[in-house]
Image (cartoon, rainbow, N blue to C red; front, side, top):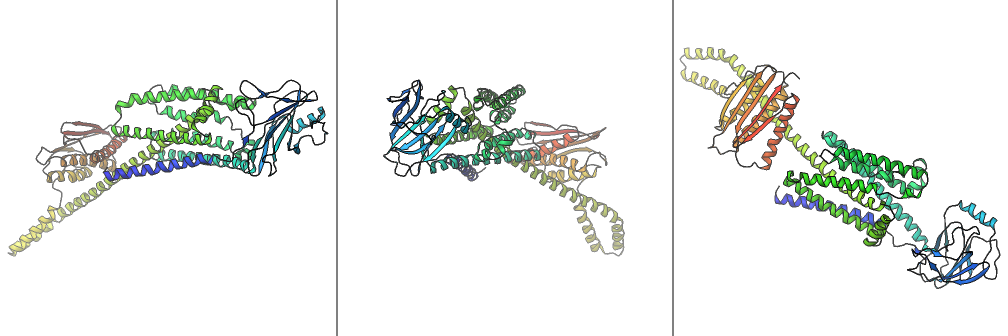
Length: 637
């Protein structure tokens, strides 16, 4: 590869990497909005300016909030009936809205004493502005909420800025929650932005997973077409992205509001979607403990899937966590792959080491872009690593870390798979093209030699007529005319093959084509081709084997110095049902050029294919200054 083509290759790779990075960055930015809600909550570490009043046994008193050990929630005294919190609004938002989550309590909201929302519109108030709902009203509120959390939204007047907001939370007499409802301050735009961004981002990711699943399916078909043995392992990657696609579709707004979630319960996929990926990576291990590792992965997958499915059916909170099993399995597979790489390091070629180094650079870039996207969502890399991963790990949830590891590994595996499939496809196509060209040349040579054989037979048939005509000319005393006639006949004979190498027409044609060329270049030729006219072997197979063998021998001699000892020795013998073929030729002692080695390799591949077809092997030997190829074809297939 020349310097210019190398730079073209680097430029093409840079363009591909830039486009991939741009797509990933855009997808990450699609998951971020600057129209976020503001949670107006008080904690021990951060206060939002609320003033507290509590209602206990019909008496109103000011209250200084006391927070628990984890800074939240607020602790209220026993017997509290209601808590009223007030603050001056200082956050300016266009088309402002308040939102809160209600569970088993009642809420009233007012602005400078003007009532904006109440869950008790029919009740009168005491002198302190509180209402006193009875048990029947509490039962009615509970029935309306169906015993679940409820999201409540209300609009604020445009002139709310600088006015006092008051939120009163009433607690049922039979206990339950005793925490004031802190509202979210946002807008209609923020609500729509959250919904749109969340939906668009997941739809884009879902589409990418679908495309990757289709791409892997296409790779499987391509590998089957190229007759590669690892085609079935790509089904694991296809299954991995199919599961990712279904898992993502289940989490989108479209999936939530469609009949998908009603007819299919796919939440258990989140526990096992990484299993096909782990199995694919395990299949890359060449050592004897590959299959025990695969069996272990399948056993763990069965346990994880059954557990997730059962806890989902039981509506347990554990259904939203991923235990350490997935991470342990991945680390085991990663350690096995690392051990395999260390074992194979000394056997890898320089080109393979360069390719692995390139994959390492791509893996680092993919990880960096992925972390950049997560950092954008979490307003920084540190919050993502600490709050998003470390905190979840401390609570026993390995889900965020498993997602990080699996996503980066999936993307990197796709890069490796696509690159390797394309490389093998190009190599296979190049091999096929070379073999087709060689077959075409062989058939052309075969046809030319058949034409020469026909011409020889025709000339022999006409020789009697030539002799009769020549005798008549000499009898007439026309010596010059007789000489011209003889020269014309000799010219026709010069175009015929110089010798006969075998009784078999095909062997004679092919051997004559290459060995005559060798003699013309002063290459010493020795041959013993004891082959009968009929052989139980297809003409095309014999032609491919013999042509490639002799062409490799002739090209090796042509690369040598003309003054060196150049020779080709061919031996073909029929021994019972076996056709013994052997060719020994001189060869240059220096290293071959890459294109010469590649061209000779295609010929050897073709010869090997013929040998295997006839239940034999191709034996290749290369010593100092000499090359030999030998096979013993069995003709009772």
